[in-house]
Amino acid sequence: MINKVLVANRGEIALRVIRTCRELGIPTVAVYSTADADSMHRLLADEAVCIGPPPAVRSYLNIPAIISAAELTGADAIHPGYGFLAENARFAEICERCGIKFIGPSSEVISKMGDKAAARRIAWEAGVPITPGSEGVCSDAGEVRRVAREVGYPIVLKASAGGGGKGMRVVRSEEELEAALTAARAEAEAAFGSGAVYVERFVERLRHVEVQVLADAHGNTVAFPERDCSVQRRYQKLIEESPAPGLEPELRGRMQDAAVALAEEIGYEGAGTVEFVLADGEFYFMEMNTRLQVEHPVTEMVTGADLVAEQIRVAAGERLGEHNLEPVGHAMEFRINAEDPRRNFLPQTGPVEFYNPPGGPGVRVDSHLYTGYTITPYYDSLLAKLVVWAEDRAAVVRRSLRALEEFAFTGVETTIPLHMAILEDEEFARGGVPTGFLAARSFQSSEGRLRLSAAARAAS
Image (cartoon, rainbow, N blue to C red; front, side, top):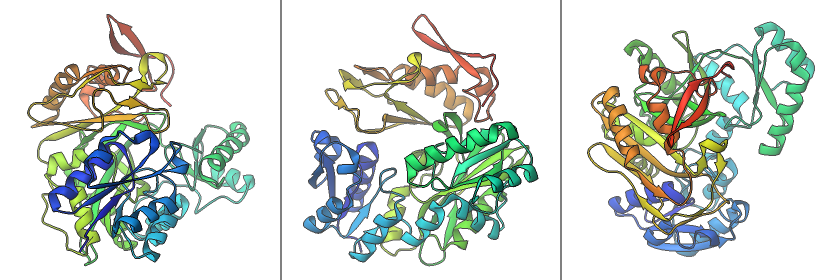
């Protein structure tokens, strides 16, 4: 049994976990920085402990403070949410040594999948398709050059310890290689403390499609309908949907089987996501996220599952419940960020003067905002997630436009106008856009509304 859960996070995901725990009858402990003293997650939890000043490294990444808060309050489990310490193998290991249940996979599994080059090798051993490239981390520039010649240009350099596009460079010719390798290593070292990189063949006009898995300690593993996360800006997801447009049932089945095979290969327990690139009707392993994803609500909307509840039940040693593994209807999620798309996505801070989220059938908003809340510069720009369900994709688009139009938010600029412009774009309406979709367009503003137009530059 789990008797009390400490939520080692903030914002909407902390609220998400607290709400599910309350429905399960489990008391919760919120941790917060001094910048979040008036936060909703602090107010709604049963107990709250201040763990430090605003900078994340001194609060939400402060492992000793979080463990002390758990011991002080008698919490016997920690839910890490996503971001911060969610994929930190050392944090998971410390929880294990302190007798605190980490609601997620073991520290050993997190470590294996956290090394992207090692994860790629494990996927290959599990029979999961991978793109041609290096067998592991490249030891020097000479090995990078040799692998590049073998697989053929263009290639992509990827940080072995990374994610989110950091330490990643596309190289289209050998003349570009040295400068790109230097830049990728430097960025990876700064972001992750390791400059190790590996090489993959770069797939043009790819889609980013992922499969949610759940596994328990009794040998049961299931895969849910896939999510298409191809609408991105600088490798950061903006819109996610499920199921993926135009995906044939046979291909969906093969992707789900591959995700289950990988999870079983590593002895996975809990909720995780296997990410693939999809091109020309074939899919290839990209990485595995050993945590709950930001976009998990779209899976919940098309299946009726409560993924957070399943995480907690699995952590308590229970078997997986029965789930509908076929998509019912269609769902999309829109990340509402504190950024101004009209001014090159300039970050926004300041008070929320008025906040009234949309409602109605099939509309869900996950957010920590309220009127009077102050957006600070210390954390991620995500303010809210608008999740919309309808019986088919065309209906979702119509309902999403309605919901975005009635999303009342003043005080700072947000990405709401960008989402509306995307929904009105003809290529997006057809479905199946590649990850270069936004990079191939420019933004135009007309009568207060943002518009997308095809740009002269090629997608990147």
